[in-house]
Length: 116
Length: 169
Length: 274
Image 1: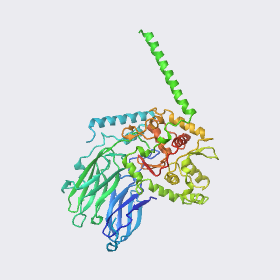
Image 2 (image 1 turned 60 degrees about the vertical axis):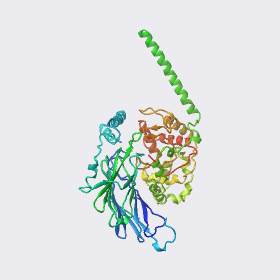
Image 3 (image 1 turned 45 degrees about the horizontal axis):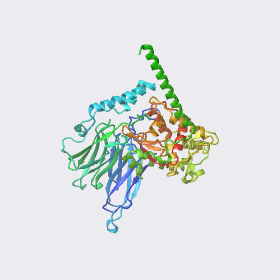
Image 4 (image 1 turned 135 degrees about the horizontal axis):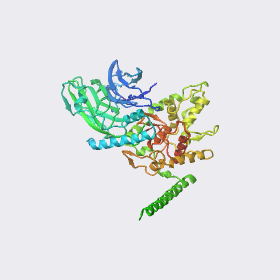
């Protein structure tokens, strides 16, 4: 069971280009190292991770053994309309990890406060 | 500049010698010995790739230009297992002109490609952060493919030293 | 000088030096055993953070991306998870996390029932087996590390204060002896680097004081959470000494000595170390 956490800005207004930070708990075993008993740990890394929003892939990363364990990815999205962010990743073992988060985007004309 | 061959050579021999002594002292079998040696950063044997070799899988005949990318990596990594990397490609990220792919490539790692990102105008900014693994002091190359098929790149050298006390878990 | 005279001269010199070194050595050790002398004054205690680089400081300070945080979350889940024949979770008996406030500052401690010195991991495993009647979590398993981190986090920011009275006294002295005795192929005592030379660089690493206040820690070299015991075993590797088995009493004795030595230093988790 792996956990993942997502960080988003507190307020997002339509048209903003905002930062997302995703931290996934995954050993990203390179296949080159040994465990505490001295046994070689088989390679098991995330093969691809995608972010789907409104049925469209808006971010994709294909890491390799060169990506650190418990990977952190930071990227940007242009805010359009509210919806659900769906993160999905698959590793060498075929394990599918998922994270869903509601994204609330305030319409541009309603915003009177200065943008963050 | 990377260490001169003689200094690398010296350090590598010293590391091998000290591990060898340890191996003998703790009565390890030869096979185990070799695995530890394999783990010890061997700065002379791990081949440093040429730049052309590093970008060849992704660039066939398209123009490649240096610049337009801000790459941020520490000059001296605390530990090779986790090296924070940030990059930003100058691009309006519009439908007409945007970054389509970003490749993060290693000069010395057993697997050259460390990660590949797929982006589009929906990202608004071609700015990313991640954490890479670097197997020894080397140059990191970030290669960006633009929507017009051209490529841009930037490089940075990172010094990665072996842990002061050689680790075996 | 002629042959035999030179030999005698040399021999007597050697004997004198040998006697001096041993007497000096004995003198050096005796005070350690007799008095609870602090080799680093209490006001000079520093966490490992003071000896790390900027990237580690950033990583640890990042409220979101600290690599130890997912393990803390896992620990929270395990706290509430019902387990074992008695159908209880930690929460069933102990309530919320705040009931664990201060616990991590007092361990290792003597277990009254068995008289053994328990570190926090031992205490948790004991509780799981005896009270929950659940399958054991092996030492250094992710579950045990996560729950230990969670329990330790209840004491975050609190000063360490362990007891070395009663049955703990002999364990403290044993730990102190190990810390101040040379060992391994490199023939080094912990004290030589961590009391006498902290702050000085060994290759590109700054020697720390070897404090235990930030464990379990996310150690980048191992790319996962690690216990103090694992870290101490690695210290043995560092001086090329034979590593004791997992669960060895020596590790707990050293931990007790370290915690006494760190009196007043604040618990700091989840931490990130090289």
